[in-house]
Image (cartoon, rainbow, N blue to C red; front, side, top):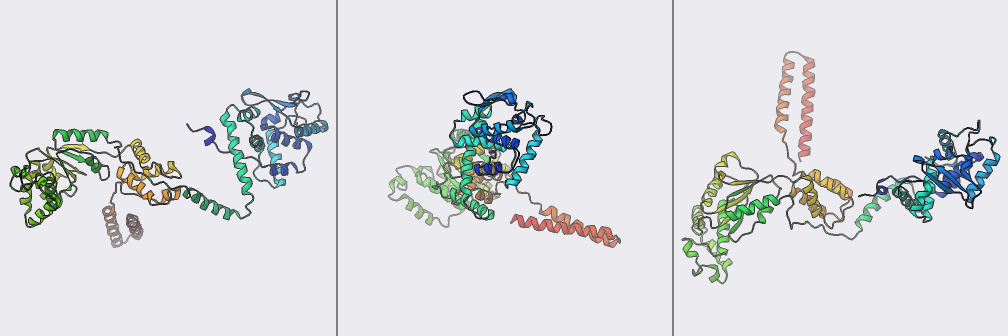
Length: 516
């Protein structure tokens, strides 16, 4: 849980030279005492205005103020020698000596109002050349002074009347900030020069860290456990399966995780002849390729790879010998080398589906169990997959996307992880491939700063809608309307149609520009 002190805005406090400049302004004894008490005892404005003479205890070993703060909480604040001096001088010189209020109104002796204190503070700050000063800043100054002197946060809490240590601990952060500002005042350059240096140095400080290469963890699935279990179950049972989903959702990755002794993997079935040669090569590796039938693939066959000194080079020789072999002959060669349902053929991508590939699938399916992936099954090819079990792969949920982002960016030097995560989520739209590619793009930069995150774009995961046809159709309609208005002599309609056509031309121009 984030500490409250880490999310609060740091309060503004006066530096000691600013406080001394404020007190050095010519003012009446009451206001001088008021400013000193606010700054040296940490009173709230309401507490100072309602402070009674009876609340000052002079006779104790440690002269102090007894206060009743927010929610009726009482506290005791010691007075140092400076506060005692200014209070004594004011109480001895005031005209309304019988007023029960310490800081009374100079005209009638009544209780001082908050508005009067704010107005007086504004006037004195302008005379001292200090901008944006309000009375509560003096209370913050008191808390910061205590933190500068390493007073325990529990003691700061009691002296300032806070109900929580988290509220009091914020002055520790203010103290550190004041130290930084004190050093910054040594820099006498213009504000523009300091601002530009701050921007450059911020990126340099981050880039100068020891660089850690981004690791894309691909050792486990994220949000795909159920689909993977179903695929493995179908593989063990020999069930023809189609893995369906848009580009980048992880179909190829899931297929790569399927491992079995009777599994043959090929990238695609396009072109047909090349894919059949690849299947034949896989069969040759395990000694099952035979031009004449399964019996020739026995281990005692001289063409079996176990009986060859260089089986790989032997297949290249075999391939050269069959350069002129037709697709049908290669198909027969592959089918003759296996028994029905003996092997599972895993095809990584069937997106380039054609009628001839569909017929090839039908032939291979007579002997092989087929597990393949493609974005969608179009109607002309439904007949080739009517008996296939279909596994739908959806985009990742937000929680799974965040998990994948954490996995991919593990060990990375990222300046603002929350901003980076949000940017990746917006651009990827739950597409795992887009997430990985965006992170890989970050790897090419010296450091993943905020500017890098803003500059890196990836729109491939978003659904693209082509409005060109609709815009052209509207443009033709507007042009036709323009000629029609001119024909009937309507000048107003002619002008409006001209404006509409100009707008559509501009829209089309920007659509083309952004599409590039």
